[in-house]
Length: 338
Image (cartoon, rainbow, N blue to C red):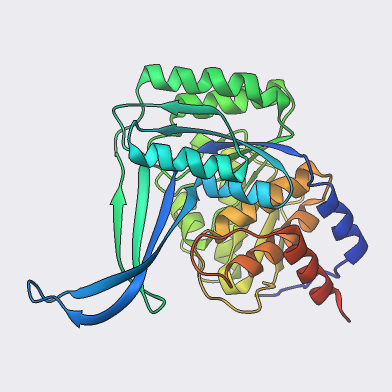
């Protein structure tokens, strides 16, 4: 696959990054907590052939679409989060995390019939032993759906760009999706979508840009990506069905493939990751950086390069992570060197 490493205009990228400050981003999607229970294993349980973990630390982080909002905040933007919480202890913990991160909560709705999503990972010596998920699988009710739409109706006009983060946990219904794209079109606001392969592509009609990874692109398009030809076909299929001007397919260690509906051209840019430790949340960082870049006047190529650089930082960290402006500036400087 032919790759072209763009010439990084350091001054231009730094100017775009400065414009991230105070950009108001509305993030819509499933929300929850990522919990990391960290300890050591010294023996096997006498009750069953399983390791006993002596807990040394517990870390609670904003997860799912809340991680996107946290990435917006750490990069200098202002994030407002639209999502659904249960009426439980995890909801209280989640709100505490949002308060610490200074993320707007006016679009959060409580649904007593649902559990607040919590994903607990048991980790020993950097090795994940087990993951325990607490979540509900049913879609939100018509009443809750209407409350969410009422909230976002007030927030879309005040936003610089909208991020739709679909984790297929019941938040993004067909009615809600239609409402988001209709309101965004009326207010002339762009919508960046991180799609879910469990959803139909038609759900995302009206998006300005979609950012699936390779596996997601395969499932969404129905095309197995084996080579450059099949990658082009998958990208074209997503463009055609969604009527989106742009699609960015993230290719892991192979970088990103950019698709433009106007020219029907594909551009592949290589990854800027120095070391890959954990890919958790990399997609969240990509769509956050791309959306902030577009809202700051960047071209799609510039937005993709910044997204690629930001992802290169977070994959070098353990677990769900964010990237700071200083870290991104450092990456821009490093990769701009002749």
